[in-house]
Length: 113
Image (cartoon, rainbow, N blue to C red; front, side, top):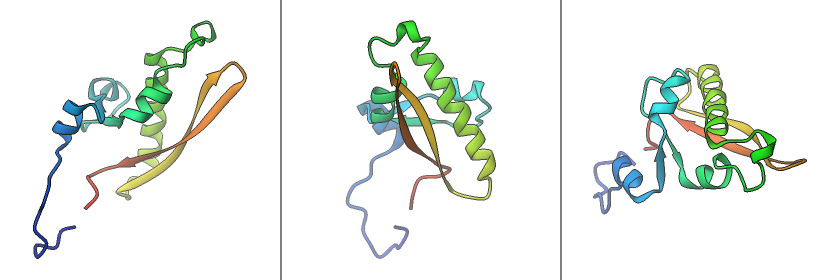
């Protein structure tokens, strides 16, 4: 909230969230997909979906490949929503042979106020 009549009780920075492991910094990988700003993803998205579940190695699944696919789809969504501060899109992840999970992802261009 930007109303100055409310005192800030607690502030949690992006750097602190990355240090705590709540956010995973993927800026280097995101630059390869065309992002110009720093990019971080939530630890749940990273741990549950970007890191492939065990047993999928023979299915051509790797963390690098899944992260690249996520970031490429993120870039497409970001370009479609250029005038918006928040863009939602779905990503389909293979969870085990024959089973997929659809994950709703959100891009925020700036931190929510």
